[in-house]
Image (cartoon, rainbow, N blue to C red; front, top):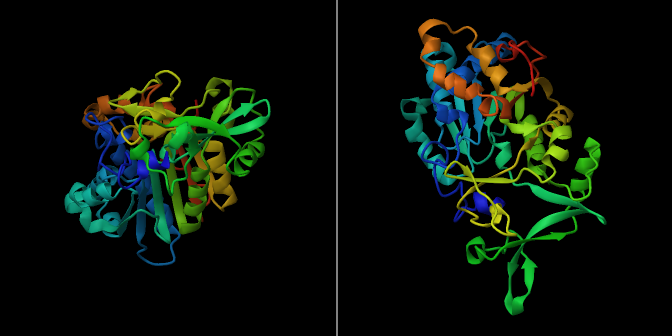
Length: 372
């Protein structure tokens, strides 16, 4: 999954500046139009006010960090709304775009246009230290996962095997594995766990898998939130993604796992015994649902406070509550898409975390903190 998505030569995300949208393979809240960024700008402005009210300096810098920023479309929408509504906040805002794809990073200045004056850094890594808000929209679901399956002799991990001479196979490491060389000849094999952290992960959650259940474990997401918590000096983290609490993710309803591929807005189906995620590696998106319980637990252990966890529907409803008349009517179609049951509204969850800010009552959580 790491190679298929992020390898700088043949990785799915590495080879293009943008993969979503009508001409892409999948649809995100950003593809609805600027509305999603405008709504986030409302929430960010409130958070900036909370930080300024308790700042040590008279005019504190406000860092906006977007992780998994792609070519910068979401940040562009946010910044444009901030500039139009609050020139004072705009003048002290520093933008940091975090993106693994070099192609996407190269496209960021053009996407930002006249807003690029606020761009402070563009990198593959989070800033060493920042004070403000970190936004991660549909980032964690694209982190490489471990897939495991419960057998009679215990938990086993799914690996990828490639052919070698004399008809034998071997499992190759990332260091010496040439994906393009073996495309079409790869196959999944079961083996012992690559790390005891996988069993420990399930034990910590109190999860006992039934015989035959196959699930994904995203250790990278847990590591990422811990790292983000250390780098955040003071402020907020907003994680938006599709996923579930652990009790729902690791249950009979998802007993065959959630590892999915997308191309041309269609979930690719497996053909024969080969899983879809091995059929065209590097040419399709690969994703798995997020375990929000583990992300939240890791965040709190790292010193963050959970402020809210809710469906995107209710987050959007709360932020749009003050809009009336033409402003609301002109955005009705986009709003319906962002709040659609069974679509972006209910499948996507919003996790808001804080550090050094207490537990404020935020606008985005004022409608109803509900999770479906």
